[in-house]
Image (tube, rainbow, N blue to C red; front, side, top):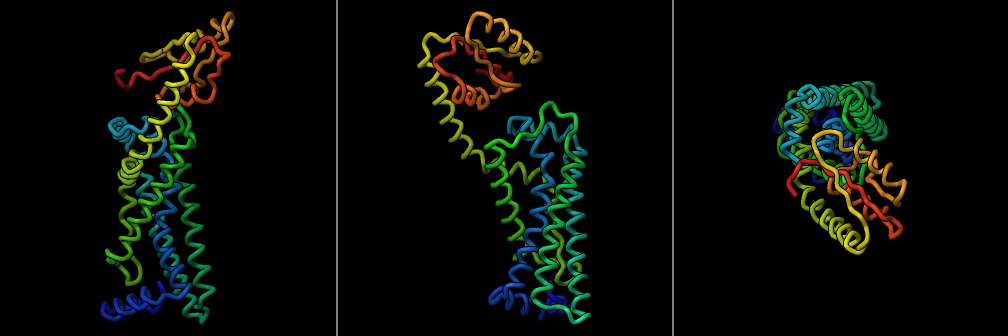
Amino acid sequence: MSPDTMVNTSGNMNLLHLVEIMNPSFPDIVDIAAYILVPVLCCLFGAKGILHYFQLESYQFPGYFRTLGRNKKHALLPGIVAFVFVVIIRLGGYFANQLLYGAGLYHGVTRIIVYVLMMVLAVLAGVFISKLFTEKKAKKPFVITGRVKRLYVVFFIVMTLVSVAEYFLLRTSILTGFRLSLWPLLLPLVVALAGLLAWPIEKLISECYFRDARRKLLASKDLIRIGITGSYGKTSVKHVLGTILSEKFTTLITPASFNTPMGVSRTIREKLTPSYQVFVGEMGARHVG
């Protein structure tokens, strides 16, 4: 977005851009990074509510898309607002560079300051979006688990690759040197793509967890195992039963509303010891088996 690349002559523009790519200065590198990362950072923080829906549906795509369909406002508006913020931030950077150039202050240090400020503003915009569109009455709060951390990493990589491809391949513009990023408008689909790409990793990890939990259960031959499932009241019944049984037996119950295979496996792996006589597990009624 340097003034040299803002001249509205496509031939010169392409040549200058090619020179910048082949032999970039450090400010040029920060310029490219800012262009690529502004939408990425904004969406990384702004997609918290959408990622929360994915977590609430146990990372299952049918349930995730049904939830998005029932909550169109919280599903679509984060990406739309992120798109608007990215446009505003990029326009701000564009005109800031123009003003610096006109005042004779356009050099490496001031350019870097402008680009860093753009990225900081993108983060702040993303935080604002997440607070604005996070579901306030969700059944469970958003929890930063190991799986969510891995999903965030894949989500960041996917968005960065899309933004890089956009920068180098889709150089459409309304002002030469200023380009629109349209992909934030598809933010729920980008989250789904990240989840799909992360699935093989999670499948491998979950299988290891399941095998370890099964081994622990089979090793506890005298352990009384009780599973509670159903549409409603699982958590309440679990706590009532656990309280009753604990009067006579050393009893372990799955904490809070842990009822997914991973949640139950985690409880067994981390908390089940030979001293327990009874294990009460809450099991979601999502699948057969």
